[in-house]
Image (cartoon, rainbow, N blue to C red; front, top):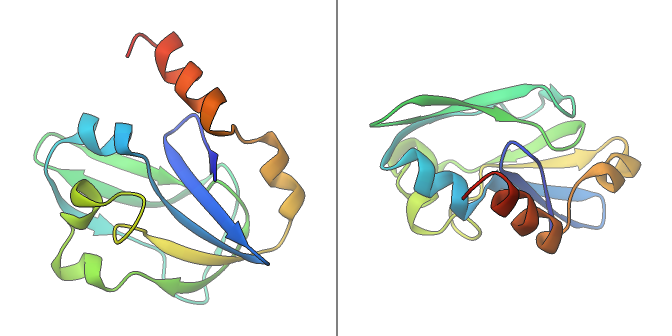
Length: 123
């Protein structure tokens, strides 16, 4: 699993990357009430906005940790956005992409680096 500075994660199996938000992100957001995602077939680009997460506190951008074509969207989030709070690394996944440039993952943080990053930010 790899992490971004904007608190998204990606887990890659073969050429498919599953993307979600981190436990830290969901705690910071509070109760999530709506998730806007790209559609199946959309192309997303690493480091750019791919959707939004709306909580009772704020609306936050979802940024793509890697580039690729969206091959699956978690439809459960349409009626159960709270899955992002309840299980951010499991049932709360957001989209799956077919990676177009796997080397982009090299610039992301591993779990230890991500935890160190959060600590450095004063959390």
